[in-house]
Length: 373
Image (cartoon, rainbow, N blue to C red):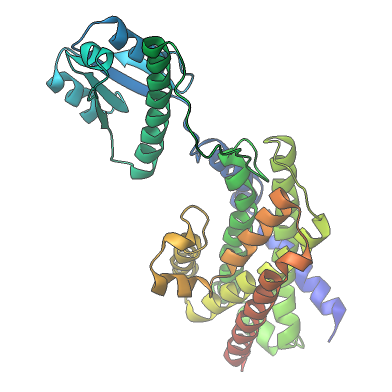
């Protein structure tokens, strides 16, 4: 094996990549746009719940209830529709997130010590958001009930109960950015390495230079290394850039070892480069290779736990996730960024990445070798 030939192949690949201005934009601007979009847009934090209120009682108690919501930093009373139809229109048009209907006898029922029904209507088109909003609503109503008990009875009603002292470890403020931004590292590496590797060989075939490479003294392992090393370098550089941006722009903590992060990235690249080489062997044109790449990206994304918890998936689908290298890489990233854990905890994920990467890359190289014969 000649390292001089490999060096020249790598040099040639970099020249071809950066000669085209469109490639430069993809390699430099795209990762920055992705991390900014995911960091700011993909956010499950509930900070501004718009509320519409129908107050049919118009009593002191009803005003206290409305003030309980309006005085909370999470809720904002924006509309006072006249009737049920008006509230339904606001929910239908998406102008409010919750509707509260206070009955005429709410005040008298509360003063008599009886239960006063208050209707809560929620926009359930996004079920997860609706669940969070309703849970916040229950907390506000519980606090209102305690206030009314103190006012009516003149004392707090105390009884034996379990008093939870809650503390969220690793992400104390439960910020969505701390959960999503580290995953952007994996997504950027996967997207770039898959896409560029899949079209690297096809480009040679379309330009008519593949035959020249085959009849040249370059051996198949040298050709494979020359085609993959540039994208390993590019992916590692992008990993560093996105990590720096996450740390200093979004203030994402990095509690673990950067060396382990680099090691995990290299193992993950074995899988993505292997899939990219496989795509290059089954595709005839660059357009076909790009379409096939996105066919692989979507299942990787959906079955990784990036957004949707794997535990919520059907059992059969959960078994499929064990074949997804992105699943293990995300666990490693969040463990290193947020928990600061090392190989003593993450070794199963590292082992799974190594096995998957070795199998995928060896299989792709074997098929690629056959195409050279």
